[in-house]
Image 1 (cartoon, helix red, strand yellow):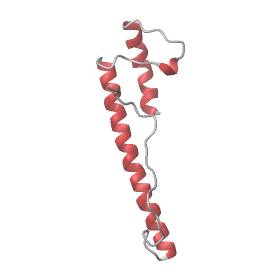
Image 2: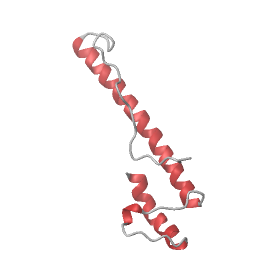
Image 3: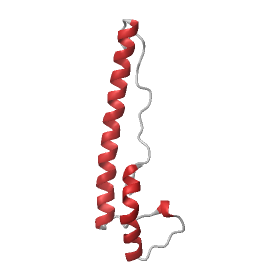
Image 4: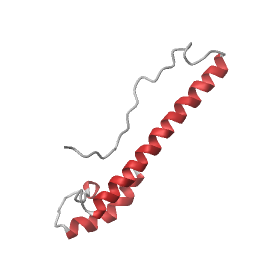
Length: 94
């Protein structure tokens, strides 16, 4: 969320330059090959990596806490990751 919020002003300048008109500021954008577009993709990639590591750490620490409290391994308690997906991630479609 912070990456997109930080990019809004930059995107609005790029939209004015490139003659892109939208009726909602939250839909601000930049051409993918522009400096602004590339900077946004890099920032989004960094945020996605951070989020993935954060979820991995939370999973590990949750399993460890349960293991300590119940004196069983995560495997014995069937504590398997069912689904892990990021959200609000920009992707290049081909």
